[in-house]
Amino acid sequence: MSLFHVLLVGIGGFFGAICRLWVSQAINKRIVSRVPAATLVINLMGSLLLGIMVGSGIEGSFFMLLGTGFMGAFTTFSTFKLEAIQLHMDKRKKELILYNVLSYGGGILLAFLGIELGMFFG
Image (tube, rainbow, N blue to C red; front, top):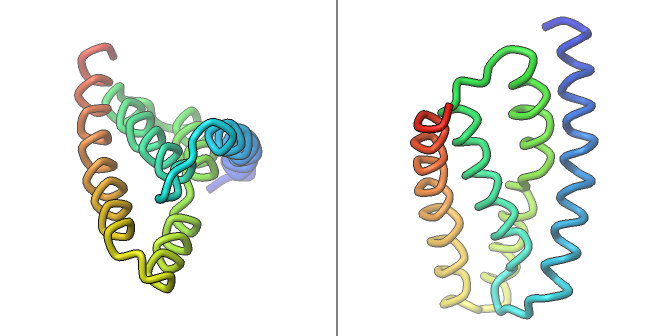
């Protein structure tokens, strides 16, 4: 990997993290939920968008910037796991199951849909 690719991932990550913060704050202001709605929506959006990128054939430097950098920082697996553990520790079993089903099932479904959309429009 070249220094150029490292810079692309870093630049994409910088903007992805900022967008995650903005989207998270906007969702938290508008939605009151028993499950962590902001992380759920962000990760589902990320699954769809990354699927679109893959399906449309984006690769190389452009994928490093958008796919690895931006989407890697925009989506948040660690926060998802922490929030799931918190639901478990708070003994909120129904919310934990719902959060996991929506996150994993919805993420896979939306990634597949994104790939199909990317191939169709790309």
